[in-house]
Length: 285
Image (cartoon, rainbow, N blue to C red; front, side, top):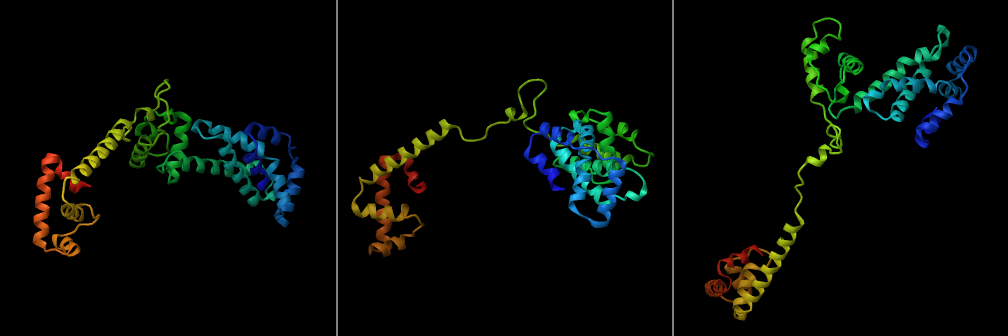
């Protein structure tokens, strides 16, 4: 039976239609004989013959759901799954044709697919909600973005004790998601075109890179004005990659903590004269 689905996956939809239309229909006698054989032996070849002979009817039923803006190939594929399910459960001894029995299964699979994919938020989780959803699809333009009101939905269902449930369902449909690629009115502008681009501007990125390069150049030039020992202290304190205390630097250089403090103080005074208020850049490197 998977062959019927393979046709959809490998060929274009129009070619698929041409191919299934060339498959001969079964006479009532042929269908009954095949169905009885499958019921008894459960062989795939017989089931495949029953399925392929009815594929054109699935396309016709799927066409009734074009308004939901789903790909026809996807709807047909789901309908084919329903047809295969019907073949497995079909009882030829009841006296009616396979397609008469399969219609319910085909519609059920297609409708379930639409419910699952029409919105990122589940819109039909109960039989009442599913019933409302597909009734609205026939009489309203909400599929094209129209808003709906609970009074109008309530008029479509049996009884008047479901008002709260209807109102809740109405709100869920009105708050459904939509594609950012969807056009605004009749123009070529989409909702995506109206979203602000929060990524960094190229000019800002270039300015930041130039500022960083300039900062490093100025610091390097300023450090050359220090004595070798002062450079060692400043390097240990601010350029070691980790936070080091006066004692840590003193232990590394073999001098006292107080001597490190004096050298650092003298070095920072020199750097302040060169870098001015930008001496704070040392701690940011």
